[in-house]
Length: 364
Image (cartoon, rainbow, N blue to C red; front, side):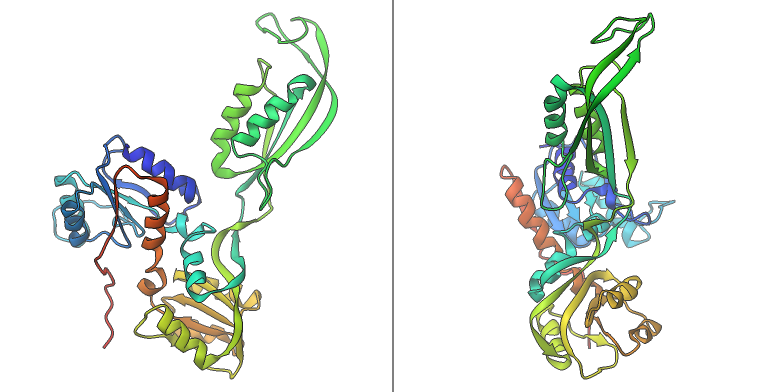
């Protein structure tokens, strides 16, 4: 398989088009046409991780965090980032980063935290906006089922747990082709009226290319009439963070002990205890201070995240337990998720889980 084929598999799982604007996801080092000998999955790409890839005959590193985040003006080996890039290039190692694309995925980073904490009745905490589109097209009655099925096969008409969703209205269309036209029905230079079906479907933004190809390939007309609009509807299975419920409510002390042990962290920094029971829990892997307001608005009793600053804890305002479990600790199971996914999808070469702990923080 080529690197670009692996990228497509990962993009189907967590589309890169849903990465946050500040992020740097995708292939950071390498060649999309390179043949893959093996894949090493890691949370961070450090020099020792590149060495690990070489030792395991893996020429593709799938990393959660991007090693190149801001622009590099020089590659002289003076920083750890430059040394990683140098070593990767010298040894023909390709580096791919998935980061916030997987943060936003329904079965991504936050789903793993929910699995570990055994949260049920899950919902996206901050649903993604401007990612649902609508296609309306007009098709002769006899061709409507063919075009509609083609759109479904391309991923159109998927709404939550339902597929093949569409709305169809019969009506009469008209057109008049000029001398250079080649109309499928009617004659050039004459206004023709045709019984048509207006087909309306919604689709996810990242599938627009496939949807348009399916429409143009299946539609019988020389000129295809269609409209695409972006809806204000929020995608309820795409976005940052997840909120769910514990099977049994817990005291604040027991909840803090539970997340400390379950997430294997050396320290849980938390806001002031309120002597409340914890039932509804919001989670967001990585730096999550921006979602405190959303967690409170959703009625969470506790919010588990990382990288909270001193003043962030004041935002608890005595009505939510803020829990900072550490950046690495909140995302540590992400590489297990990626290995499990890739192993199911690919069987002709090794998918290796990195054994290197890349956490830069130690606890005394």
